Length: 618
Image (cartoon, rainbow, N blue to C red):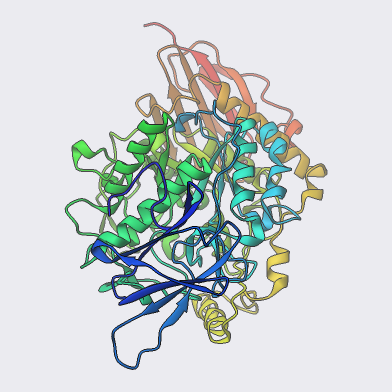
């Protein structure tokens, strides 16, 4: 089946008053749709597709698919539509026919270049008291005042029950009903665009959730060629994989075209096993570009990839897959070790400020180095990739929620260090991302939570969490992911925003983001004008970024002692732009009075100083 970038071709859609239903079911002998007491046969098309056009199904009607095989003694099964847009009764109930037409008001909207992104990652269910898209919309002015230019929604595809991180989603086309469904998401995106905020959506193309997963009844969605952390790999390159690839390409195009999403964050693409001549991600980018050209709107693909392999983000011309950007966990790991975090597990590969300086310079730390944790040489250089291809952070949903107790940085690091870590992110030549609540030093945890209905799966998840953290438990045990209390404890406490040090931290973040956006040096993600010097003995780092006119220097002191540092030569008198130790931000100092002789400056413990100066001609 040829993919039509202009309209959805699979699942149930409406055209000229008729319902059109197309199902990929190459294993079926017959496919029927049951709706309102009526049973209708689908006609067989090429390559395993079945099609029906009818006026007997209208928007709002419920329907199920009856899959009949030729195998003797095998009873037909009733299943939801694999490309269902709505599951009002949960994963195993009937699908609901939806018309995705929406009266958009964002015709003039153009997504900014990712270089302008200040990303705010959030989980819909725990971001607000309401726990839905309306709850997010009510807080958009908060994000505007903060300086956010893009929100990133954790996955919203239909999952079991009413609470989940979203990575257990089963129906990629169906928007979680408890969040507000398809219309609720469209309304949120429209509201965001009206306020100048782009929307990034986290999607999962590397696995389906286990509960309610009956895709194998329709066709070879899975392959035994590869194994992933979630079991059988999705079939991207085995026999009959074209139907699977088209399924996910259609999903990507739907988010861009029918929901006006600006960018997709593709979860763990290293788990997409594909040895085809044209990798699935490359094909995904090709179709994305076609849609961009057709609509005169630019759409972006951001990958989470744990391979330190810039092939994923390199252009087609150099043999790359063409992803626009990627998450960069190594920056996070080096930053947390520099701030005194534990050096266990994958953190054991990082030594603090030396590796942080390398990440500033080279993006990847391990770019052909031997990794003691992995016990192998790992990575390749990414020296020619621009800064806007890397997303960095001091915390995110993974790094918080995958801890045994889900502690945020505010529960692990002192208040002063939180400001240094934020400054390290926003002074980088990369795309900054913050995790919801970080801006006011939220202390409530973000824990792993589920609402499965299968008792066996519930117990398996509980035992899996206990086994995962068996070496770290001590006198504590992991929280119960199935408990409602775990979910409720993970909701943001918005009452903190205007109080005490939480208010000071919020003001600090606003100032830091404003500095990042308005500085001609910091806002330009040019890696060529960057120098990073690690002072391991002092646990300090000097970051220098410059253009042809101006130089910005960031002094970071991760140590518990005051340090004497030297600003770079070759610049006119330095002007202090930000001092995290100032009493204005709840710090212990009164601000830097002056730069000492020989460009030396005393920096308070656990603080960051940001200076600016004009270049001095030689």
